[in-house]
Length: 637
Ligand code: PRX
Image (tube, rainbow, N blue to C red):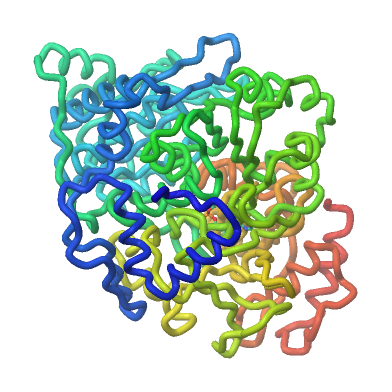
């Protein structure tokens, strides 16, 4: 039996089977993978603690599934196609055989640098093949990787390193993004001044940006590889892992506090990413799959690295940005490598749309068969443009809804197999049991209803804990509704039973598909010496989906424009450029309830420019504050 569902009827029957007999269902899917030893029990769970265990007792190594098992029949098949930032630089193709060899080599480098099973390794690299190699090398020896997106600041890296107590960091001298060069190693040096768990830094050469190498701590990737080569045996046997051993940590923002380390484990994550990859995209054996995400985010982990490789697919990774050298770059890549499936974000689509159709029209896109979207709700206009201009109305569009915590797709159509509708995520994956909840904690049954989206039953790819703080995991995801995983998103179920995600219902923003916590941005702004207090809300932004609107009380700002720039710089330094506010409004006061809580509802309305219905303001300490803010907001956008 194949892993792939081939018809809507089959989807319906598989879905039913997954709900009625979840253990049998997932065991039959897991049978498509290579286990060193099979499980004793498919599932053990409760959502109270929570305690979730899939495939207990099973032994595996995910890299044997992603590499070794394809070598015999498909060793020369491209595993990774890499397109550099600069189209004039040569692209690279790594076959499965070559990728395995490089992963084993680098796994030996890690061992030579004292990394053992269970140790945490931070990876801060540009989108180059060595990023995939480093990730898989960790998995090969059972080290836990924590990839940090290349756009995060020194401070953000340091926070993540300290939280996970990383022993080693892999980075590069620099990275290319469009016509910019960013000195990654210099950023790492700043980060390491703020933490002391890191013993070794491995530095890959990419940009020839001058770097300082600290004796005893910093080593070059290339030198370390040479050492392994001269040591003789280049092979590195795959460490035997329990299904529930941690595979990686990935930090993500929530509504409160610092980002938390979402923990994914080896067995369930492997099964879920492989299964969803094959089904959502309906991957065919010789397809070229192009996911435009960065491996610094979950989309890259699951759908550039683990999902495609566990299925022996060809995964295309791109170092650069969609608008360099011009707005046809994605389509140039599709044409150049005859890409069959492209998986991208609404933000990228909206920004490319704005450049005009000529950038899409000049390329031959006839190789495309499936289009995918991820990261934020896709508006109808972007959906239609994707469908008409890119897909020539000839390619199914899958809008995949999921989160870092989920490992893989939760709600999506399956390309060409289940129906699709503009701006709807459509149907739950087999194994996913959605529930829409009202504010009293009751499930809302039936169709044509809206509620808070929860999932009632575990699935193999879900998070198991948040690193170092299990209670935070319980509180964040499992305490709002009893015996449910709460996504934090609102959702509408149409009369036909189609699901449409309506956006976050908490204080988490989604800016260009990046998750940003309002509290985090506020904390960063408040670190500026002139700032007394601040409040962040989101507002609709034509390209980014949501923009960041900051209301700031500043001590003195003789030159408001300069203070604004300084605050932007502060946020960039503390979090990273992705969290910079789009609008800063200086205010004298913030609307607070008598108990001192900021009434964000009002601030949101003002930021949206919708002041006709501000709701009840009588509970405010000082209702006149609102009028002043409304006046100040005029002309800011
Ligand atoms: O609000 C939802 C939105 O992105 C959030 C998850 O962000 P992150 O963990 O960074 O993962 C992004 C990529 C998987 C969700 O809570 N989101 C993601 N995909 C969609 C979406 N909203 C609507 N439609 C989607 N397809």
